[in-house]
Length: 203
Image 1 (tube, rainbow, N blue to C red):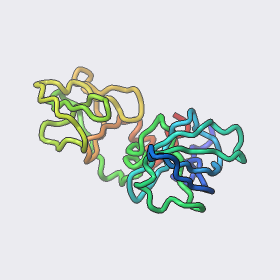
Image 2 (image 1 turned 90 degrees about the horizontal axis):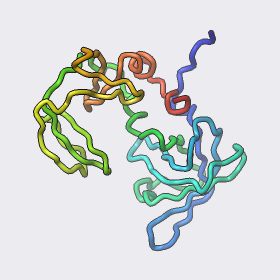
Image 3 (image 1 turned 90 degrees about the vertical axis):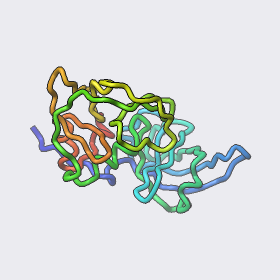
């Protein structure tokens, strides 16, 4: 069986910007460029991944059929990327994943703590139209709507990268980082320990 290759940011498709055009009053910016390869692309939504600040989400007008094909990317978030101009290159992250997944795995593995999941009170909140929960004393994410504390409400936790659920009933062990994101043992060993982001292409 061949040895597994640890994937880094440079292994993601790289989007080279060739043209940047402001569009109408709706705040959209059109970015024209080319992708270095098409592995891991499942749809038109995706991100320009930025290490130095927020990543830029938007949509391609079509999934390219070849690496040499010029692609058009529309975003309303260009203002967050002052460096956006012809010649710059961004790692492309498919929209099935979030930039936080990449940042989480690229962080030092010492930030992770092995822990057995146990049921506890949970603060429920709504962010980006999705209901989530977290420890009662944790600060709410920016833009979140507080839905209140539920005793015993945190009864299971899904791994950030795979469908495995950690629950008190199964006395599941996993790993949790400083931002209270959980990974199952398999995903920690497979991805976080070696800072391998191959899930973004293969998963």
